[in-house]
Image 1 (cartoon, rainbow, N blue to C red):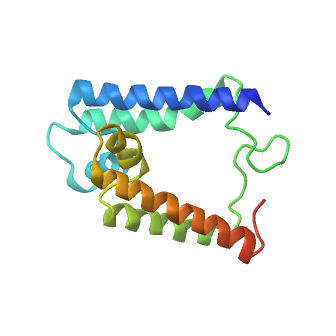
Image 2: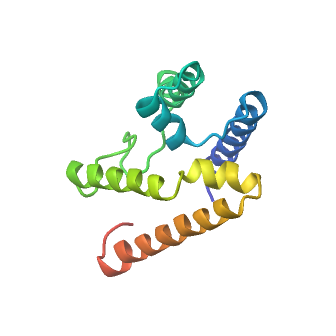
Length: 153
């Protein structure tokens, strides 16, 4: 077992939980990425943009800082030196997948960070149902890709 990867995941999870708690405690806001970015882009709320911009800049600058300090984002493609790798289905498939995720967050009134991290912590029944649907769809997709289509690892 790779304890380094497990420890990194544990530390990352703790930091996500602490960040979500801090945002709720200080601003009374849910750390749902789709809501933060969506409201920043589409509604441009008056007096409510500074923390949203700061949050998004933190999401972007964290990995960049890690790489600048000599770290990497993990070798997820099985090639030495690779950080993330090319999209398995090409750029067009990746864009379509991103669009579908965006549609899903609209239909589900939130994303995995809002429902899975914050909603479950608040014991929200709607978030429990949404997270169950997310996981069920993910399990189904992995099964189809790996066992029916024969792709993936």
